[in-house]
Amino acid sequence: MSTAPDTERPPHRPRHRWLAAIVVVLLIAIPAGYLAMSAWQSRESGEDKARSASARALIYEWPSKVQRRIYDIPIPDGSTYVGYYETNAWQRSTMYVQFRTTPGQLAVFLEEAGTERAALEEGTIAIAPSQADVIGWSFDDPERTYASTVVPGDASAPQVTITVDITKEENPRVYVVSTTEP
Image (tube, rainbow, N blue to C red; front, side, top):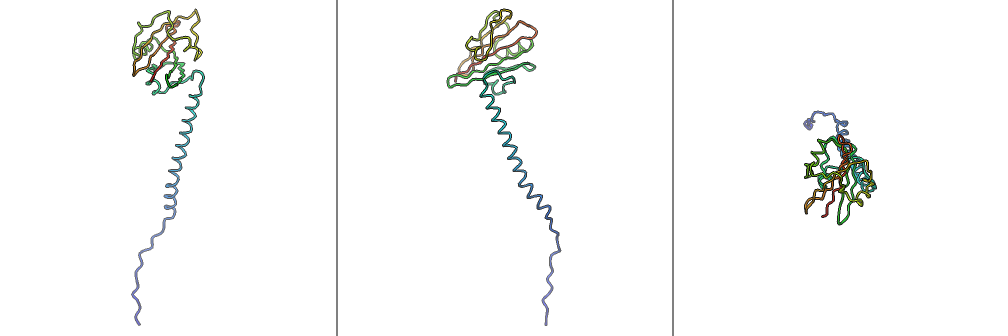
């Protein structure tokens, strides 16, 4: 009677169930975490846009870089009390911006906007009363001194109307209305 030859078994390898569990958890947890984070950011973005779209007065924060580029409003670094309001319609889109700055930064702003300090006509207010009323700006105070200029637009650039309150020359307040017509 012959016996079958003993077949050798491969050496016993302990199963690493904990390693498999970690891999499975990571394969599920990482995409789920990414999805949750993406949904949260998307929701916040929508809330910001809804708040901006429903605004009826100046929003006291810096407009986005895209908005500043579209409307050609190069607000200088270091400006304070920055506020903006944007209206959009089929025929025309307008951005209203106000900020305080220094005389040096005002010169930089005017140059980047396509004009210069000498172009400001003292005693004039170039922003139309109907435009000022949209925001609630009032240029009626006889104690204030204003200077204005208009940077004409063309087919690819908006018209930028600038009025500067130079009552405090060391800290001028700038009012800008930029209108683009596609």
